[in-house]
Each structure stands twice: as structure tokens, then as C-alpha cells.
Length: 79
Image (cartoon, rainbow, N blue to C red; front, side):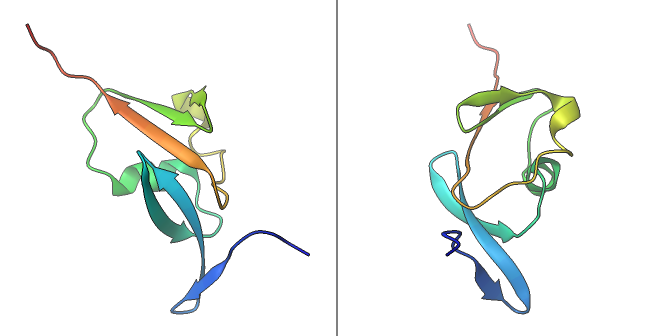
């Protein structure tokens, strides 16, 4: 039996991930780059997937799965 919690939404299979502490549903077989393109991110940020920092050239290769935990850290200057 497959333990992946898939859900159909208007004909699409959805999976649930956690992004910066909040649960989100995304289309099944979405890659990390797809997710990041949906976010309004500054030009400099770091992505961690399941407690592992991911290099930018890997974003397109990584397919997000149900239960994945994504942390997106941005930087700001201050003084």
C-alpha cells in the first residue's frame, strides 16, 4: 500500500508539502523550481529541502514529494 497522501483537485493529483512552516498543496510531479517560481522572492535566497541546502542548478531536477519540508531563507541588509 502506498502511504503517499494524494488528493485530486479539479482533475489534478495534489501532494502536501510544508514551506517555511506552512502546509501547501502543489501539483504532483512539481519540481522545486516550479514552487519557487510561484513565490515572490528577492534575487538572493537559499533553499533547504528536508534539512539539506540545495544548489540552484538542482532546482529543476528535484521533484517534490508528499511530506517534503522546504525552507526558503532570504537576506536583508541592516545596521
